[in-house]
Image 1 (tube, chains in turn green, purple):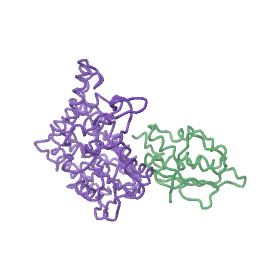
Image 2: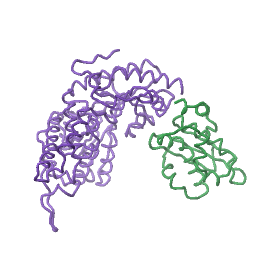
Image 3: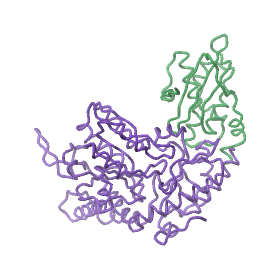
Image 4: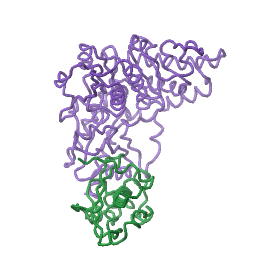
Length: 141
Length: 411
């Protein structure tokens, strides 16, 4: 248990980085984990090159694992390119999260990354890889 | 400790019938508080299945040899046990299915497709499990009928005065007991209302039958679905009871072997009840196990179970209230089955359940297959602790203690 809720996870959960909304974001997506109803919205502002992730924010509700992992993701992707993050292997985030996850909790940890990928692929007009399909069917209205 | 086990039900003693409790979970005794999702199985049921396989197994209704006769006796014996369990007028009205979900699908398809159309209304409650919601929504859409919800109040109880807003109702569908909130629904009243309007009354008793006495004649319903796995029996088998005249008039649902009278290239005719609805090889040993499970529950006493669980629910509500900062959902204990849904303020149910698991306490966290209800409650998910005849107050104490740890870690 102490493994799962280790200090860094609790820190990101209680003090999420990049929590908020960017009005008129260049890329944006809302996503849902249908297993538990957790919702995450992600907003991305690109730099002048239209490619570098200048600023990224997230909002929504979820468990400690999904909120902490999304917070870590915000730090991980800032300053990197949209193309690179759109293809980012999930292992890179999971390594950073660094806790043993059961298949159910894995979905929690990857919710933010999936929604970010939806946002980036949508902004770039590229096709979302199959493994992330279905995340963007959320109707937040 | 506020709970006193009645002489009729000694949970501590019954617990010894359940081998699952002999193990440790994360080094701690198992506190299993997820019986609403599925119940554990007593040795009596496990032995009945093993003995059936070891001594009597063959396909049923087929062979002229002794084993097939024995297997058929076991299978049909379970049908008679089921008939008695729900006080159905005739065993041929009891159909075995793969689950309560399949039972409801059977009614929705086989009755609904031929009896619903534009202008008709299908009324289901806001409390429904997806199993009694999605099939009706789908069949209503397929037939052009209107799909509507009967609302609940803030206690999670049906608002019966909203019934009269609806004209043209052809189907009323409700659960007997809500799997999310434990609400015990007034089926008898609903059935009377439905019949005054020429509608059929469909009852999902998956959560009700294991914990409350079910008498289909007293309820006055037309169809009633229940399942084995929530009732101390194996998974993979359920039952549907329906009024013979309705079942007889209905088209079949699954088609294939055993449900026929005669098959010719030009035309096939259907078998008699209940076989018309039992196509293919059924889960034979599971049906036998289902029968043993109903026998077990009957021997314990369904009414004693209901009383005991109501006490456990009251005790759990009391312990949760003491903690402070815990929101509980659903009706007062006297109108609730052994189910308590709650949220710990500021802490997501997944995290609550995860920390509790490390203490050996198993609860459910999620939407409980009731997304429309969660929306009504204004939450994405809840925690749910649910009880059965083997639940002891100590497990509820461990839940309360575990919630202290949850707060310590995540608060």
